[in-house]
Length: 196
Image (tube, rainbow, N blue to C red; front, side, top):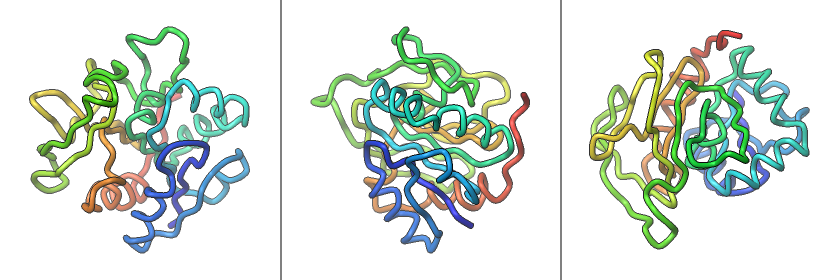
């Protein structure tokens, strides 16, 4: 199993370290050809508008969509979740990749100063999870085919649709590897292509 981490911006080194801790072979991804041989890709947090421009400039946007539709697992955290959504409610400029049928609100929890940590209830992954929220987005709408895997104060903060997993928070900043393990073992290993 080989899982890539988008290395254009954000906490990609921390995601690589978490995957290495689990014994998962991983590498950073900066160009479309770096996707070759991967069963999964993590898109980390960062600045979603900047990330979207870098994806377009490198040609990775179309390559990621094509590979996801072929069945590669994709996991977006924070800004990564914004980019994978079908709709962004409060950002008309950033065109999302549209790989999961959710609508998100950017910076829904506030600015950098409003960042916080909280326990999240996880469904199917194993109990409570201590999560780090930094300028975090919220999932404000989701389609029937989207499975909510985690909630905070009644709001969906971790969700999955087929081979795409998204979360509002930063699991790479936690000491708990369960979400990365879930992505590797349950999403990447059992991925099925998204409908065209």
